[in-house]
Image 1: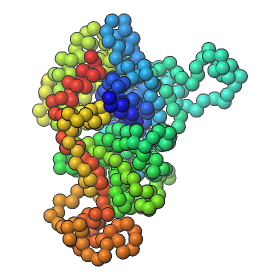
Image 2: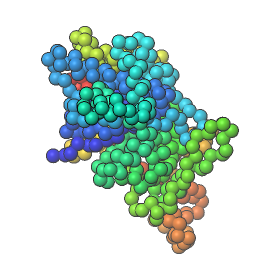
Image 3: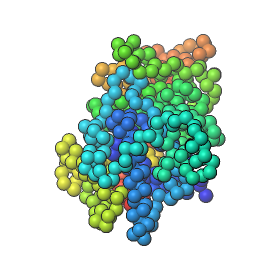
Image 4: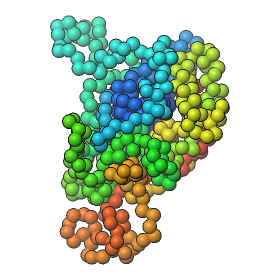
Length: 455
């Protein structure tokens, strides 16, 4: 029997982020255990992202109570088994300017749901859960010791964490055996880049890092070349991908020029040399727009699945319908062919969770290419966030295209190939990214997700 996949979810909710988290939380505890939800900025600012996570748990609580009262299957068994931590991370990128996707997700990240559905919104007191607690007093000590008040565990389905999320990630990885924790990264990669800079060997203990990001052979969704998560912090993506390389310095982004901003974002130092890092490298699997875009949820299919539940009074179905209705209207306005019931949402982020749930099954038909030298452009005026791969028909150094006697200077970078700026043809340079190129089926994910969340 396969042990549950133990995961950290790094997220910037966001419409499809919430669907991804709901899919993970509603899945069987035999398949997945969520240890930490790490919140970052991205689709909207980090405080709105945090509010969306808290609101999701608030609605799940209401949904579980409603199902009990209706005599239905309660679901969300993983939350009865263990409460995930929720930690707050970066509020901006390593680069200078924060860019958000509120044009698509709404100013609050969920299509204005806090204005339209206040009855499903948690009280503002949730903010105190993530504030530093007051000093210990006789009253709090007595309450804790006598068991009358559990002041460290609010009556919710999650546990608030006051530690910055990148440090909490590292703590979890450090306290668990190597290759037992996976990270599902479905927002800008700033939190992971901060963790990698702080303790790269610890981050590389992760079994895998599943990244929703990038556009390789298809157009971007925020510029003609770039996907939003990668574009939002291209420097963070480039730094993280570099840890897949035998020689990480060979693909590290250039040091940015001095910022005129009075409070510039952090400038992270280079990684230690390869020998100091040790032989292990990051096991990173990329889920770019190439594979995620065609996995869609149609408005008509969603309404068929949730309409009866909304009529019966399901808080969760009503809440999800509220922000998806806004999303479908946005798709109608932005894209051709999305009128009426044909309006659809690409399930970018849920696809990563789907892989975490089923990718280990031999019969699941996932296809992943190994060791692709895929790099991220960080400095281009029009190409920031673009994924770059070598499409030249050139011999590599391994195929006899190199010159010299190999690693003559001992820097681990290997020999050069004439006319190859950037070391693309050197076997010791470049990234080694795994990329998902096939799934169990484009028409399979949406019904699987709806059934898991709402059954």
